[in-house]
Image 1 (cartoon, rainbow, N blue to C red):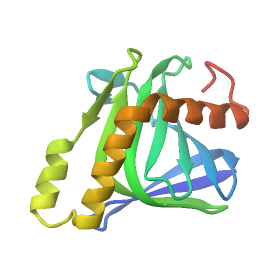
Image 2: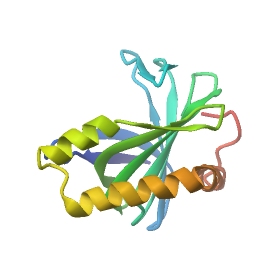
Image 3: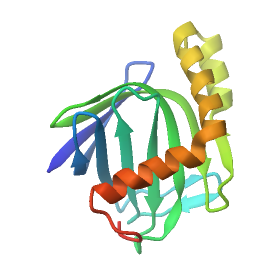
Image 4: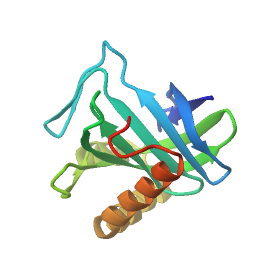
Amino acid sequence: MEVIEIKRRLDGREERFPCLALGLTDRVAVLRFNIPPEANFVVQKTVIPSGSTTIAVFWQGANYLVYKMMDARGALLGYRLDVCKDVDITTNTVNWTDLVLDAWVAASDAILFLDEDEVDELTAGGLILGEDRRIIEMTKEFLLSNYLQVISDAEKEIKSAGVKEGQS
């Protein structure tokens, strides 16, 4: 079943991604998105080539989500954890608001936060206000201490959705 992931940015822009629902309840969504052939991007020196797949795990009401990124053969490239708010899971859509700060966890299991400079710029420019900044800081602290457990929880949800190890 197709589900649309709707990512809202703080400046009001929206991005829509057509995904395959692997698992969908009112509490958790597990979605697969295939990287388009024309796309190629890099996350912290890791190339995410065209033909790769992401499996995203969203938790209703959580301030983070997990993208498991795999190449076309199903080999793990890494995990991206996005700080967010307002995750809303319905039968047709998963809506969420991006709070800019992301973390990358590669095969080394070390966590690296991305876009901290952009968070500071948007705070100074008035797009990130007090409550959002508090969510960002609290979620960053939580992920610093718990990112391996968050990834483990995401893997359990992925497995519950019927995805086997190395399958994308």
